[in-house]
Amino acid sequence: MTASVFSAERLLFTPATPDTNAIPTIFAFPNEYSVGITSLGYQVVWATLAMRSDVQVSRLFTDTHEPLPRSPELVGFSCSWELDYVNILNLLESLEIPLRAANRSDHPLVFGGGPVLTANPEPFADFFDVILLGDGENLLGDFIEAYKKVRNANRKTQLIQLAQVPGVYIPSLYKVTYHDPTGYIQSIQPVAPEVPSSVEKQTYRSNILSASTVVTEKAAWENIYMVEVVRSCPEMCRFCLASYLTLPFRTASIDSLIPAIERGLAVTDRLGLLGASVTQHPEFASLLDYLSKPQYDHVRLSIASVRTNTVTVQLAETLAHRDTRSLTIAIESGSERLRQIINKKLNNDEIIQAAVNAKAGGLSSLKLYGMVGIPGEEPEDLEQTMAMMRLLKKATPGLRLTLGCSTFVPKAHTPFQWFGVNPQAEKYLQLLQKQLKPQGIDFRPESYNWSVIQALISRGDRRLSKLLELTRHYGDSLGSYRRAFKELRGQLPELNFYVHTNWPTAQILPWSHLQGPLPQATLIKHLASAEALFKSAITV
Image 1 (spheres, one colour):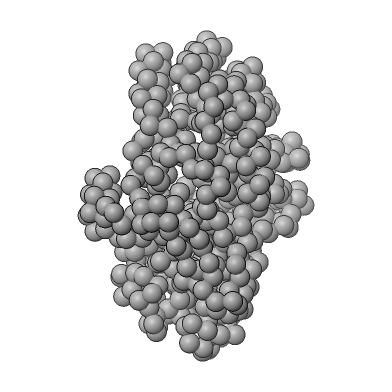
Image 2 (cartoon, rainbow, N blue to C red):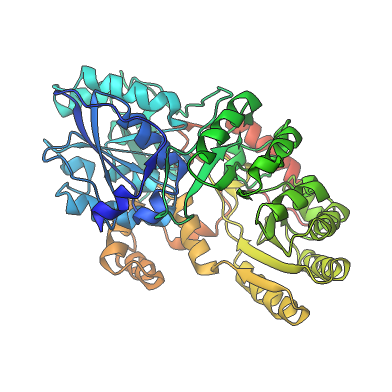
């Protein structure tokens, strides 16, 4: 399997020939090859390492790997999904590396990066020697250069020196104390005076964003070439990690986008435009005109996500002409009040217009993203979502409508990080299912129970590492989490504390020593703006 997977790759960069003294490195994605190779972040970091002559990098996935060095010095993980932590532990075990950083001595340094670890690395802190917070463009090079200087030093010296690099977080150099084993955090302190008291997420500010470094038919999205059009999102919906964690909103210049697209279309006819809000690129219309040229008639175009009020007939026509049948928009709710609470600047007329334009442009289906359990939600907000879906159905006969619906999960560095998951959300999902199915609307709810686990990890602290190890031991099912909590009772808070409790804003958060793009005072202000619109006060 291995040879055929890697031989199918078409590289869009030239790997360097490693020096004789190059750092032997394993760079892993904790999932199958077809999933990992579709991650633009993973592709770019791997290519960045492979283009350095001072690094010899081998890739590792759960189902395949390149020839691995006998004595690696660095083992890195790119983390895109919370629940992939099980695969991280499995891969460490397969490499005969102790799972906990505290038990490593002459082993490789284990580092990690990616959205999950940048948002809240604390549940996984005990498993990593080094965590890279933020955009990898500059951070990765800074980390490698700093490591080269301490390559032959002892582990303690290495870690203390690496901690001086902005964005490089060394969890073992911070001591966390708790009011009691099942209570809130009391303090997070560096263990030595030379360790910075906080670590700041690194932000890449260029107008040249990333693009695929490899195209392969073995990827989950077969032969796709991906171009990052925008990074972050200007909308700042108050629950949204993709917006708040990655601020400021950055756009790739057209001068860099067009050559990047041409480079990809020389090897494939499938193009993906990526970003949290692609159509908000200030020159998106020019980009669309460019892609509408007859020479690109054979190209299959897909767009990651589209802001609802930018769905024009021209956009729909371009996509339909480029072999795309469907479009996805995020509406969150059919309730105007609820959308105001989350700062979603959108009204129902715009949603209906987007559906009408999608149909007029020749698309056959429209997928909408909704959410239940949003802080401040009342049963009548749910009624309004159902009413709006009925209106959409009426306004666009023949257009296939799908409502994908998730449960609100609090995320670090957002104004809604202090809210817990609403236990009513499960009931709300069932109610939508019951009401919408008979209307001929395809309703696709995300699992409420797995949303609870996602919330546990996204809000967790270091006490969870024991729980995560036990859960994996018990088989990594929903029941395994319950069983592990039961066994560890008294050693860490209950599930309810992490998942459903509204936390006081004065409380130290697990990630309080990790500085995101906005200060806490600003997040509290944004939170207060949302709460002012609640019908019944919920103070957190």
